[in-house]
Amino acid sequence: MKKTFKKINLRGQFFSPDMIIAIFIFVVAISFFFISSENINQQISVLEERKRIDEVAHSTMNFLLYSPGIPSNWESKEFSDVNFFGLVTERNKISQEKINSFVSFFNNNYDDSKKKLGLRGFDLKLSVIDSQNNVIFSAGQEKSNPYKVLYYDKIAYYLDEIVIVRGEFYYDN
Amino acid sequence: MIINNKGLFISTDSFVGLTLVFILILTSLIFLSQVSFNSWNSIDLISATRDLSSVLEKTTVLENSIKQNSSELISSTLISTPISFCFEVTIFNSNDLDLPIISTIKPGCVKYSNEISSVERTIVLNQNNDLEFYIARVSGWFE
Image (cartoon, rainbow over all chains, first blue to last red; front, side, top):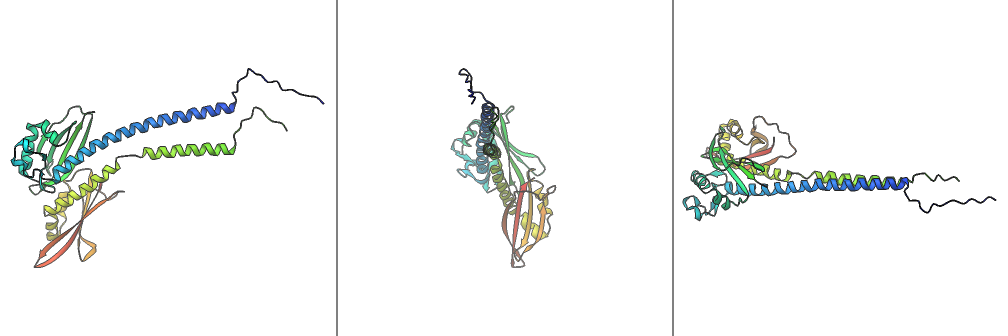
């Protein structure tokens, strides 16, 4: 009987095709994970930012068009006595006195008016547009190179005519 | 038995396992990429529909349309609403909720959307000392 002995190379390395395939799959999976997690993180930060702007825009516009303000007769008070602006006497019905006072306060004390509306870090331009697309009231400041702008339109009526109240929210990062 | 030392060990089990892992990763990525601003859009739509119904009611557009039995007044009001929104106004007599007496859609809009928000208002008219009850339905969707 012939005996056969297999030579074992002690200095050899274990580097089989199985190993190559396994490492390849592992590297692909890891890179796929990092690339996709980076994309997801970016998406989440964009969504978070948008959510913050949306919340501010919604709450500001809703309060302006659903509430008479605090105090409710703020239009006849001094600027320092106003806690929050509201443009309506009842839901969606814009009051002539309130909108005139708002435009005056907002244009003369822009920064302080923004603080009363809770708009820190934002700039606001508010326009009232009639059915012929004419701007009948405009208050606030338009920013030239903003990081982001959110246009927010709401339906209301002024002197028994339907109007659009457009809030332009400018946000700098 | 001859054993090929250079052979690859790719069993059915490992193949099925790898396929499942990739399907799982792909499915989770598809779900995560679907995160969008839809929730805010729904709030905007509901809010716009409520605002319009409130405006139509308080400016007596609905009341006058019923008295004139015409949709022209409503149509001319709907034109002035924001471009991104479409609206339909349907008015029923409370005795017959199947057949609308007035129905109109904002000019340039087609009623086709996955998401429609509806608000109903009751209108009471005194006609010849008789109280008539009508129901106005305002539906809104994105253009």
